[in-house]
Length: 307
Image (cartoon, rainbow, N blue to C red; front, side, top):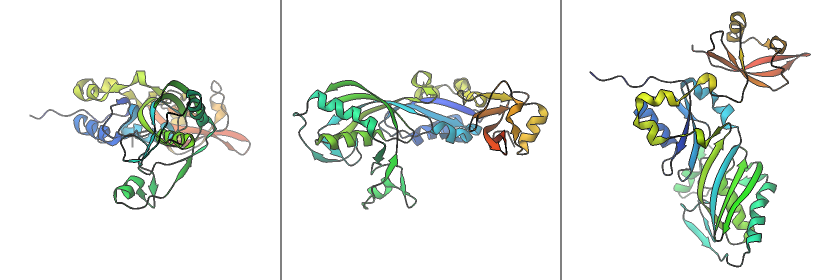
């Protein structure tokens, strides 16, 4: 008899993505090998990139908007002296220029200049969309790719080493920031061009690389897989968890708002967020504090209970 595959799990897996496969490739491997038909992620990584990929399973896929929005930390390396169509070294070289005249101080100043940037060009080979089609599809078809820009915030930059033409760095940034575009903009400012040569995501708030499991480890032992997955109730560790009474849980299931004053041990301000738990500790809903008249109340962002 055919052995049943692993059951669909609800929760979160912190994966250490390897270089080479796309984020979707990694998810498809888990889907096929471990029977996780309902699967997603919170923030994609380019094929070249490694590091923290937050994989969401079952009901955990409902958490994607709230985990994707967190800060990201990357360690990277760029190569001076060339530009490519992808803004990284895996693309086609478009131009080359000398970099030898640049001093280490010039290069350091340009890297630290990222902290002053608030808007960036989206790489022409990316999943960003134009009229419903990803830019990489337009590029592959030989069509002109429109220049798109997006807002970003750089919270911190650390220069790890400067050994021209290679420069290593660490950057803490807002969600959706393209590190390839930071490298490209630096090359433009220095006048010699630059392309990203290495990238590792060290953290996708609130998860870090030391919590991550390698893809081969995950796939090699189906019986151990469940022990690697963080349960749904623990998948937003930076949010308070508020356990409700049976009556309160019933109100939440019906979409009712709950007065913030019901939880004096957890003082809340407008826009505070929390996970509601049922009386038995099962995840019930994600909630956010809103003002209703003169009172602060918890409103439901997303139900998590099983239908």
